[in-house]
Structures are given as C-alpha cells and as structure tokens.
Amino acid sequence: MSQHLRPQTWIDRLTAQKSKKAGQPPTQTHGIADATVEVSGSFLLDILFGLGPYRSLMLHSMLRHEIGRINPDNWYDRRRLVAALHEMESKIGPHILFWIGKKTAAEIFQRAEAVAETPHDALVLLDRRYRLSHRLNPNDGRAPEPIGQWVFERIESGRARVSIETPYPQQWIFGLLSGAVRDADPLVQIQSLPNVGQAYVFDLRWNL
Image 1 (tube, rainbow, N blue to C red):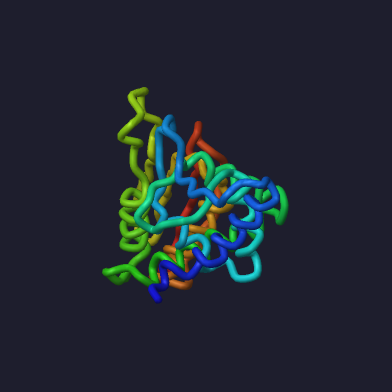
Image 2 (cartoon, rainbow, N blue to C red; image 1 turned 120 degrees about the horizontal axis):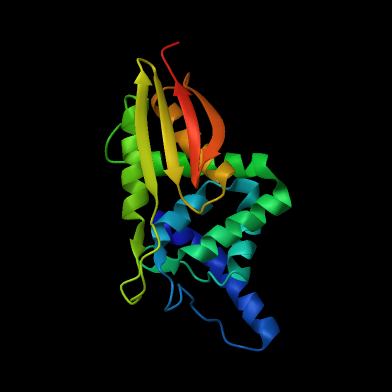
C-alpha cells in the first residue's frame, strides 16, 4: 500500500464515527466553493505523517473544521487547515506546535528530489514545496488572497533574515523553518524576531 494512503484508514474511521453519531452517511469534504486559497492533500499528509502521539488529536481537529477523508490529489480550503492548527496550539501549546512544524519539514525533506547543502538551499526547497502545495481556487472570481511570500535577505556572510507572510500560526512556521535549515546544517541558529507588519521575521546564523 502506498505510504500516502495509510492515514486515510484512520480518517475514514473517524469520519464514519462522526457521521454515525449525526445519523448521516460518511461524506468526503475537500474545500468549499468560495475558498480563495487551497492546500494540497499531499501537504496535509506531510503534516500528519510526523505527528506521532499527536496524530489522532490533529485528525479530530481537522474533522471539526470539515477536513474529512484526505486524498493526496485533492485540494482543500486552507482556512480550515489554519483553523485546525490554531486549535491545536490552544490545546497543546506553542512549543508542541513548533515541534509539529519541525516534523512537517522532516517529512518534506525525506521525499525531496534534491539535497539541501546550505541553509539557503533548504529555504529554496521549502519555498518550492510550499508554492506547489498551495493554489488559488479556480472557481473563485474574487480578488485573490495571497498564497504567501517568503523573502530571503542575506545580511552578511553566515547570516540572513527571512520574512514570511502567511496566515499559518507563527510557531508552526518557526518549527517548519527550523527543521528545514537544520536539515542542511544542524548548527544553524535561528531566532524569531518581532513581526514587521503582517510578516513573521526570523534571523539565521551559521558557520559560527
């Protein structure tokens, strides 16, 4: 059985339990018509694969926000994933959400086609995966909501600053970024700085 299909067994069971309580047949939900930005099912599975003891909690949170059976080829309303991650943060705390972000990065880089040899390479690969995993809903005629923007600014040799505009929780992005750059260099130091406008800002140092 394909690795991508394993979590569907758990999701199917949880969805069936929820539908049985409501007296309705199980349904497959993957976004709504007016969602401006969508996230791929494969990206959702990247999040779920690395959750360990928190997987069941995340699955229940996704179900509460109407993310049902996950198909890696389908697209889902990003607002629902963002809401589920914020709910996880309120239940288990920011430190665990940071850890979930790191585990998501580990899943992404485990299947990456290229090897990141520097922190910058890692950020390029992460940004590419992020953009391939998000899209504007083709059925939405409104002005598009930003998919997200990552800006890498080299300050000096061995130091850079990353600004990220995204609706995802800050601690999850912090963990995602930390897991990515440390995949290339375990000694990278990364610090979260005060937000600039709507952007999360991180300071990276390496070769210290």
